[in-house]
Structure formats: C-alpha cells, structure tokens
Image 1 (tube, rainbow, N blue to C red):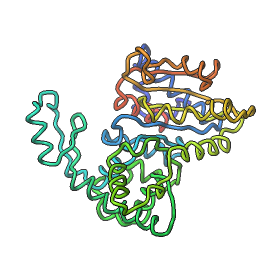
Image 2 (cartoon, rainbow, N blue to C red):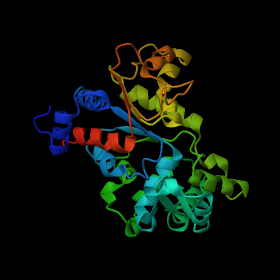
Image 3 (cartoon, one colour):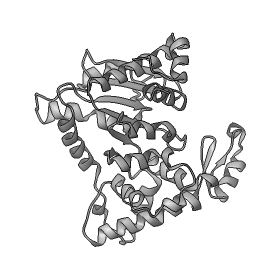
Image 4 (tube, one colour):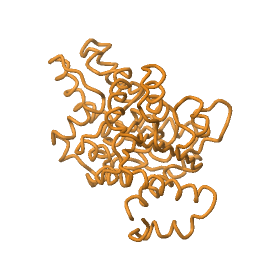
Length: 326
C-alpha cells in the first residue's frame, strides 16, 4: 500500500518509528485497511478544528470518499463557514500567552472572539452568517418544516447565495465538501454554539418555534438507523479527534442498539483511533484509554485500537496526508 505514497508520507514512513509517531503511522495504516475492506468511517471533531483550518485536508478526505459520516460540536459546524466567508478579517495573535485581562477586554470591545491564537470577527463572521441562517430557519418555521442543524447549513451553502462571499479557496471548506457529497453530520449539543444561541434568542422572542430544529434525541435515532444501514458485516470505523460529546455521543449508538434495543446482529465499531492531548486521568472521558470502552460495549477485544497523545492540529493532517497519498 505504500508504493504510490507521496513525499509527506514517505518522510513519515522513514522517520516515525517510535512512541506517538509510530502510533500515528500504525493508526493511518489501519484506517487504510478499513477502507480496503469496504468499511465506512466516521470522523468526530471536538476542539476548534475548523478554526484551525482542518478543512485543508479533511475536505479532500470527504471528496475522495475516505470519510462517510461526521460527528462534530456545534462550534466546528459553524466555524468552518465563518472561516469560509470572513477569513480576511480574522486576527492572529501568536503571543496570546502574554495577553493580560485588559488586553482580552480590548479584543472583546473590538468584537473579536479569541480561540487560542486566532480571533473570530463577530460582525463579518458570526452576525453575517446569522442573517442567512435566520432566513432558512424562518422559511422552515413558516412552512412547518423541521431539519437538523447541519441541514440548514447545507441549504445556505448549496443555494449559492454565499458563493460571492468566499474568502478562501472553496476546496478548503470541509463543510462545503460534505454538503456537496450530502454526507450526514451528527451535531450533539448543537445549542452549545454561537448559532445555537442565535436560534434560542429567536425562540425566546417567539419569532421561531423551538421544534423547527430537530433535537439531539432525534439525532441518536437518525444515527441508529444510519449505522444499521451502513455497518455491513464488519461495522463502521471510528476516528476521534479530541474528546467530549463529539466522541462520546456517537460511539454510544452501538451499545444502545445492543443493550436497549436488544438487536443481536449489529456489529460493533470496526476500528477506533483517538487523537488527544488529554492525559489519562481521574474519570475523564477524553483521557480514558480505549480498553475502557470494552466494558461499556462500545468496542470489543479484537477491535484495532489506537491512541495518539499529541496535538490534533499536527497529527490529523498527517494521517489524512497518508490516506490521500500526499
């Protein structure tokens, strides 16, 4: 499988021989084996991966059918679009560790919301997209239609109304790539996001009904149906970036199918890899080793399991580069 690999991958194969580097290569090779076997793959996104511009590699993964379903936080869903239409207005602060509380207050007053070393501009990104989402929400509400959070984003992206506003190469937007492929995006806890707050405010003022947005329970029902239709005989692979709800919500669909619905012929997840900088610790889900998931019925003893304890903004693009033959 390595004969046609590009220079980035060839470098990794020569130098990444031990510790987290070796785990990275092992995980990438096992991911590729899953695809060769015909297994479908889920990628989960926690942290600020969209603001970190993971779309530069993830979008091509989607276009090449190397990822078939995504679970992400509400922040990752919206921040890819924020970057798509407002990239030129972002402010990078490489010395963010040196900021005083007064410096942070000045950023607030200038309407810049900081994510580590990057500030998202409120007016050009958040409020701009709010206008388009509101119209989609209101149209659905007026017509008694209901959709999942990602479907509203797909509507505004595929309508073409944002095309003239793109400030990056459209090929670097993972959400646009996903919309064009129409792959499902599970967004548990979507209300914990900027756009979720927007939506709640319209509900409080009775402008839009809460039921216009499909719920987390409906997301789990949707995922249960999708998994059964796509798991085949081997199961679906699970590639987790970070921890939290983006990982824990979707992985639970398998034990739910087995333990709560008493379905006996549904295979477990066929592969598991997590990239995390969370140390193995006291009751932490993000820091739990993969074997703990066996006790919850999420993985089985034979499942290929990998944990790469490193920065996902470094590791994920390298694994994707391996899979894309870069």
